[in-house]
Image 1: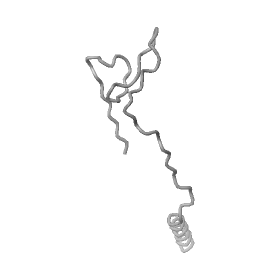
Image 2 (image 1 turned 90 degrees about the horizontal axis):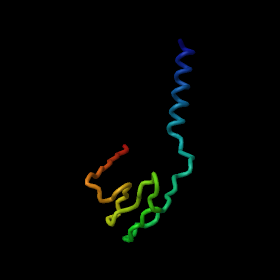
Image 3 (image 1 turned 30 degrees about the vertical axis):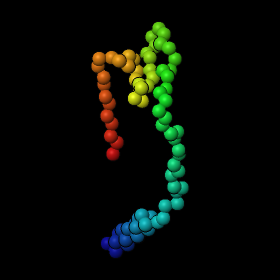
Image 4 (image 1 turned 120 degrees about the vertical axis):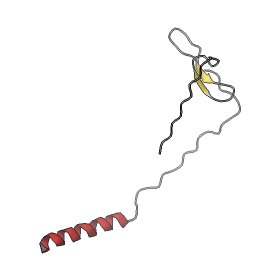
Length: 80
């Protein structure tokens, strides 16, 4: 019984020291992304056989297919 208690105590001390040690990993660096502009981006290429038109609307929203279609799908994602 005393040997088991000693092993558990040593394990708890080691885990406590590991949890309280300072983080030696390099901090994350921020990467600056280009600033948004008011200039709309023209569609990428012209659609041919089997290709779908893609680009950005005048409001800056990306689209794929007919930008003036009667049905619009909105996708919402939240990562927590």
